[in-house]
Amino acid sequence: MSTATMELDARSAVAANGVNDAAQPLLQRIAALEARLEEMESRIPKDKVTMVVFSGDLDRVLAAFIIASGAAAMGQEVSMFFTFWGLNALRKQRKLQGKKLTEKMMALMSPADTKHMGVSKLNFFGAGAVMLRQMMKEKNVTSVEELIDLCAELGVKMVSCEMSRDVMGIDPSELRPDVETGGVAAYLADALESRVTLFI
Amino acid sequence: MTTDVATIQVHQELDVRGLNCPMPLVKARQAILKLDVGQVLKVISTDRGSVKDFQGWAKAANNVALLAQSEEAAPDGKTLYLHYVQRTK
Image 1 (cartoon, rainbow over the protein chains, first blue to last red):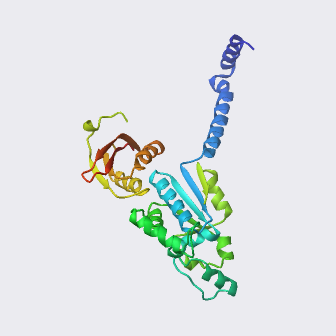
Image 2: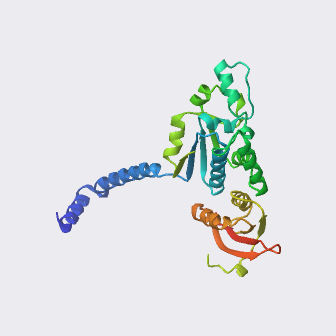
Image 3: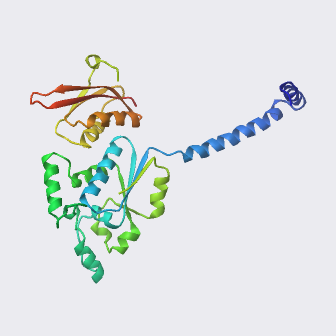
């Protein structure tokens, strides 16, 4: 159909039915496009960073909290999901009461808090961790404990994985009080709309 | 980042000398949120990494502009890295 005939058609439609009827298909199309745009906008990643903290090694946990605090400072919304050994980073204390034998053993072999975490390389029964902390202090690098508090202050969301917490026999009262609880879908819901997601 | 440092009107100075990554950025962020929109924060740092960090911050954030960066020798022989950050939103 040529443009001229389309114009004629539109004109005759207006003449026959008034402006409203002629505009009807156009309005419908605009509404459909708006709905599509809204749907697409909801799928665009947001200024968000998510992390899975699986490791309970001091150096890795330190890296996670440095990235988290940096991202929060840059104005990003940050969520950290702690699972398995990573849960030790959220630990404030160790409890043995009311635990099964295996859970007690696990608790005794795991760091009671961040101060007792080892490093991923050259740990030598904790000597490496002590050395790293000493070297960080000399270079005036913020400690992991200070960074965790700083992240909480900056609004970084910390979520503990319920399943692994249960498996490891960690009582919720052993963790920081400001920690939220979630599962894989809680992580994925945040990760799917993040620009950056890391597994540490 | 073509602004001449001499012409920038600084509203507040933040001294983060001796602090390492990520603290210069974190402190700057906290300080700039206390300023009004349009005001400028001057950050004095000894962290060499802060040069790229502040560029990255300005690129990623929608509420700050990096007006200028410069280097200066401190009396103790260390290099100071200066950043001029404006709150835009």
